[in-house]
Image (tube, rainbow, N blue to C red; front, top):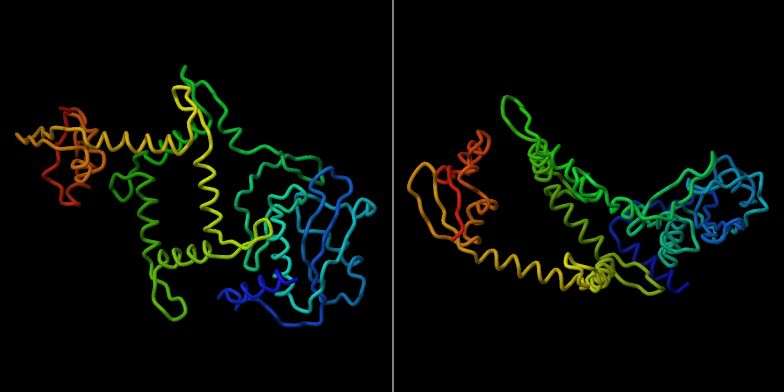
Length: 349
């Protein structure tokens, strides 16, 4: 109970707790646990419930069978009650404390990833948390769904042959998505792409001014604030208090230590491969190029790093595919005040 008291205090320190309803309305708000005896694993489910206002009985287990459970992934069959054990864990006189206690149990047992529970997310006092959960549901029968037990990544990593070349489903889907995004379309008489339209809309939305607690701010700033709060939230992992940020760092370190096979069939850690990529990029930035222009006699010797200060993809430009070749790119360069670079391309030295 000491851990729950600490957890409750931390919840009440959060500004979002002001929206929680601690009003006593005469009803019995309860947290329950269902045990399913028909399962070999994932036997338990923690949930909470508030009876309807017109319910006047005292038998909460009897009342539970009128509600069953919010878990759509496991339909409880009320005609086979002998398969289940229902236990009322704790009763409260207000909905907020019921929610906080359920959230505490979910965090304590980490039910979304715990093999002994069939909860698909961790309840928090302010919503649901599904971080780290892999969803892949197979239709079992008319009444229930069960987890396929297979990560989505296993499917998309499957190798396929496209135009005689080996690739994966994930890469093909990504290619098609990029083609669709980069497809040129005409909007209000101007040539653009879906990607550029989406980018402009997002930029406009994020810069939109809003009022929060009587103070003017933007959606972008508010989003960063919320993210910072989320990362500093205290959670319980293996019975110990930690923050989401600390947990994220621990996971990242574990990932970087993973052993994988590179293109040459050599086993390396992710950290080693990342370091090699960074070093390779640095070498490329040190390469020397000659910057030329098809419309004049421009000739400048520059490194890739210097070229990237003009525009990111300048080092890829050729005599046949120079900067500002298309009407759209030419217009964009004029808008950015880069007229002097229209017609530029590079040659490696």
